[in-house]
Amino acid sequence: MTGNKNLNESYTIRFVLIAAVFATTLITSNIIAVKIFEFGPFPLDAAVLLFPITYIIGDILTEVYGYSRARQIIWIGFFCNLIAVIAISIAGAIPAAEDVWLNQESWNNILGLTPRIVAASLIAYLAGEFVNSYVLAKMKIITEGRMLWARTITSTIFGQGLDTCIFIPLAFWGIFPTKVLALMILGQWLVKTAIEITATPITYIVVGWLKHSEGVDVYDYETNFSPIRFRK
Image (cartoon, rainbow, N blue to C red):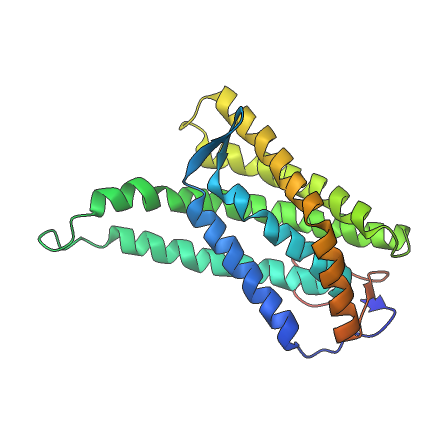
């Protein structure tokens, strides 16, 4: 991983905080995804309000720290999600104290869907996040670091598109009709991309601040882009 300035091997507090927000946003998105609401003609799950933030953070990580550091956070998010779904599954399987706690049916109706949704999300998330980060890193080299707005939007179109096309069918097939699933895919893709576009000024501010504070601006000229590589 090479760039204008070398990235210190230690993890700064800023990097750790970004990683924490990323993982928290990802886990929360998977929990609230069981709620479906209508946005014009589109039925959407509630995660659409929060999940795009993970892509914005992914863009920031890749732009500032490079693909290899973004890859580390993507895998951290994956394992944090895995812990959450295992914990929820175990908690749901534990026999309830029927004379004390009378909400098992409500738990099953809401969080009972969570393991399936998280499983779908884990697959879609890995595919979408890695494509998003890869496209942005490659475009940064091609554009020589210019037009950040074009790189974040383009990478989101590809990453969120793939994520949505994988997630919706895996999470909701058999629950909603095919027509509804198609509308959900289209609606989610449009809304997520719109959020990325709207957040572009904030992305510029955060990227500029981090590059100045961290003293780093990585270009992935020699990076190994394998998603299963855990080091540079």
